[in-house]
Image (cartoon, rainbow, N blue to C red; front, side, top):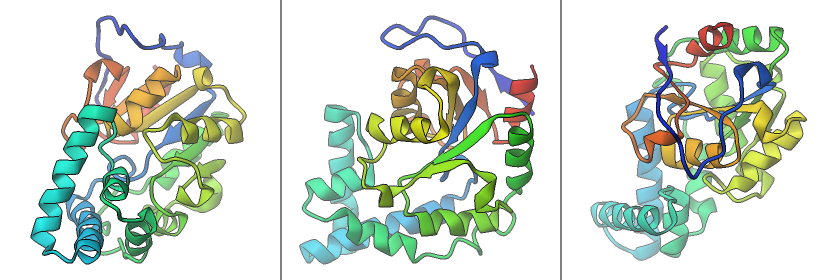
Length: 239
């Protein structure tokens, strides 16, 4: 599995630690543990419907309004999340997150590679594994079931039920590190979003791995390693 390390300096960010210091791996879910543009689009639809219902407008108009607000938030705050944009447009996050939690990912992930064996292999090496998601836990558990992951194959999680600000705010990253019993410098964050996942992780001093399942949405200088899929972590930690 190909995995490369970018070269060059990374000013404005804390330096990376040696891989030998990695004691825990923090994982994003969507786009990281699986790749399904179709399921991602269905989740996006729930945000558009929630906004259309709140505003009394068409779904198409809501889609454009949400796109514009997300672009503005990314430019002003570095936060392109649907939740932040919806809240700025007067829609409570629960309206979207509750609807998304009702979705069934099974038909979209039927051919997705199993991830459970990868997590077991990581933990067999003494590495703790945590999950950080902007989803509700019930949806994360549904995704886990599709990917052959048992909930007890992770050591800790932070989902929206924890009541913390969501990514890219640093609070959930720090909370997950605390639950795993590590400091950020001992953690590796693995995600598909440069802006939501890897930028805050890098600012906290974590080693970062970019799963390249989606287009770049931020500054590539925050990337320590690039991988096509999650199983490349085993090769990385063996190098």
